[in-house]
Length: 462
Image (cartoon, rainbow, N blue to C red; front, top):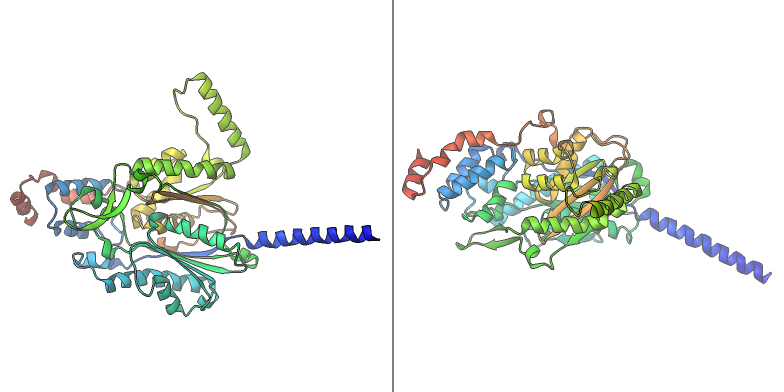
């Protein structure tokens, strides 16, 4: 009898352990219920005419800077319909103020959250976790406090304010929420990602700090996540894996992208020559962890075999073997940081123009919207009806520090086809060329400018 009781007790303990493990695993899932990207009003568009006026009224620029900006603007991959901050449009970028900066943030945050709550039937009072990732602005009370006050959220909501994370912030926030879901069961989480441009528009003449003015544009996004298994049937995607890498221990990586003051006291972002190397290393180190967990075993074995034979027969000469990324992923959401970033990522991942099209078009239509950029890329895929149930999506984001953060999603909805912010323009995309030829046609006279200030100013006035 004692033996029977002991065996029965052990059996019950085993069943209890299995059941508990099942419940924990079930509640550790991370589902994307919905997302909303921000689209500014048409009066904030930075077309050729507006960009030209903006550049010409900067008294710190000379003929060399004009030529650099013309060349860069034409080849940046930015189109005619991106959006800029209000003070730049109004011509008051020399005197940014806190009220204007907070108004810009409010438009993005509240505009996307209103739609997110309405479209998904979730009340703000149901939110358990709130994560805000807006890097370059500080307010008291904090930005999350503004959200809590606006929507009258519960007093026990778990709040996280991630600052200074740059273009990689939204993926970092997703990873954070995924880990929090392991502790907080049956929860809803909201992530808001954007950037504050009004107080950070560079007004000097340092080339390394002028580039962000060309690339960065107004944008943002809000995400609704949950670990409730009962909401799986309403979800768009399920998070399969997230991997983060931070190379800040390296001085070169740390200093590759920094916010500094120039010699005249103007504040802005400085992009150093070590940035490409820092980015390449960050991507490589991240993929060393990510790819063995996501690519099929047959592809890993093939790569190992080919690499071994290559090292033995070619003395490390010739084309280096590479992994077939498409064996594990059907779609690639690459951070639309700029044409050079997209080209480099495409080469390193072995992607073709079809794979890169969503990222190129997101950059062309909306510019570099910082941490929100990859969600504009996803929205393009959805608007083009590319996403099918069971497809896997690799999201790759890069940020100052230097960081590379990736996450892998699986589409679980039968069809993702919401046009979102692409509603009024998706029929015009993809464009044949992302070069801004209209800018070149209108301002080609810049190349004729002589370095003397007097002649330069005379030409500009004419």
